Image (cartoon, rainbow, N blue to C red; front, side):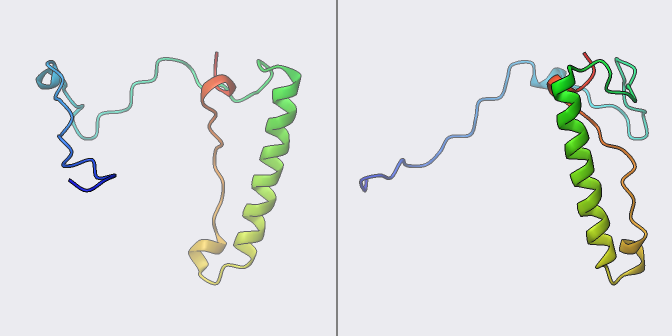
Length: 91
């Protein structure tokens, strides 16, 4: 074998419970464990400020990009939601 060559890679092992995984039927609504919040008042002031700044930047850049769009469907673009995950999401 050449130096630096790691050889053929083996496929990852299949977990023993792989056959037990069941995917939802197509068209089944997603399961929601917690109610989605529409406010950020549950976050510390520092994170609220960061989110306000990020939201402002996203909206300004998006507005700039649709101004330059040449296709009608792009000019009619809208940001409908900004979904937060992790420590910024719902507690």
